[in-house]
Length: 171
Ligand SMILES: [Zn+2]
Image (cartoon, rainbow, N blue to C red; front, side, top):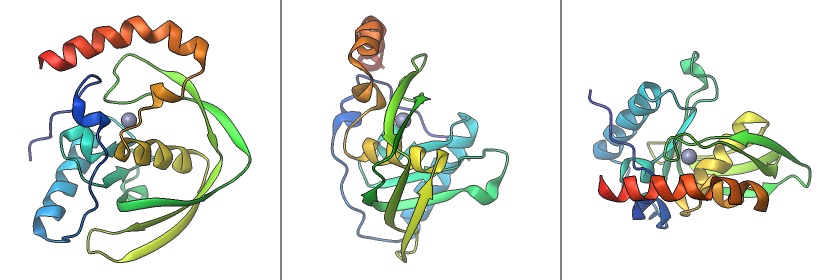
């Protein structure tokens, strides 16, 4: 199976709000398989559909890439509640290569989502999984982690983002 091309910062699809998934068919299953494959090839811990050019509310998450049992597929995820307690941890993104930065997020969240067959689930997650899920749900709303950096850090990476955007638009 060929992996999908990752869209890079500057590509408009990364800024669009993705559409709800309504049909849970073979085509959805195939897209999810390809997303998982792409996440593994690119060595990521999460991937959202807009990052591979599909504006639909789908994300795959795998906090431990060495362990396929931790893989989770989220269709139409919605964050129901967040802890008041936050932490500030360094993040990166396959769509923003070469740039990392600390982002403050709630430590624990409750997420409602559907699986690839449409079954409904609700999980409480904490720590790394919670952080990855929040990062991926952001993608579905057109938000990137660089939007959430501190003012100082944003200023520092501004030039590099501009370069990325120029390259992303050309591709
Ligand atoms: Zn990302």
